[in-house]
Amino acid sequence: MSGHSKWSTIKRKKGALDARRGKIFSRIVKEIDISVREGGPDPDANPRLRLAIDNAKGVNMPKDNIERAINKADRDPSNLQETTFEGYAPYGVAIFIECLTDNHLRTVSSIRSVFNKRGGNLGTHGSLGFLFDRKGIITVPKEKVEDTESFELEVIDAGAEDIEINEEVYYITTSMEEFGPVRKKIEDTGIEPENAGLQRIPNTLKQLDVDEALRVLKMVEEFEDDDDVQNVYHNLEITDEVAKALEQDS
Image (cartoon, rainbow, N blue to C red; front, side, top):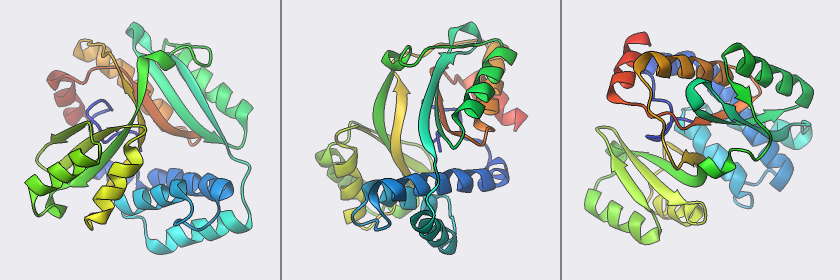
């Protein structure tokens, strides 16, 4: 959920993604649950739920699973609460963690334990918010775009700030305010995004050598393995050397 932008941890190989698909589904189910509780079970009237459904489709979550999650949340909503944590990994790398939890004390204990074990420091709420900007990140597979020039112009006219293209995917960045209109414009063209959501984008990046960077990313991975964690953001720069080491490790 946190990683389809150039600022996030580099995307792992498909096999690694498949291995974690169950965890990805679990996080989406949580997002559906809290979305339904906040805005009801009708995605047409609930933008947050509609976004959760789009992201579920983007990771090929079966339709039956999506419908079951919506129905369960409508009948028997959980007591999930949203909470965030901020702190520093080793070497001064900033970490911002978003959680959905039904037991705040358990989550605090778990997050603090990882910071302590990995040589980091858990900060106070709001202490690192200035290091990250809320941006909309939308990813669209290139194969779904028939007319590249027309698509890019429409997205820019709708308010996109930046379009980055690699061999497989368009990475579209928007301001938080323009995220909804840009996403709607893409949907109006008949294209279903692979992933869409608001992310916390660092406004400065910290570069480390490979060994130091891998140590930090091990910490990030441990946070991501926590069932209460939805997204982990950091300001570590993923250099080509770090990316190569990650590929060899995956």
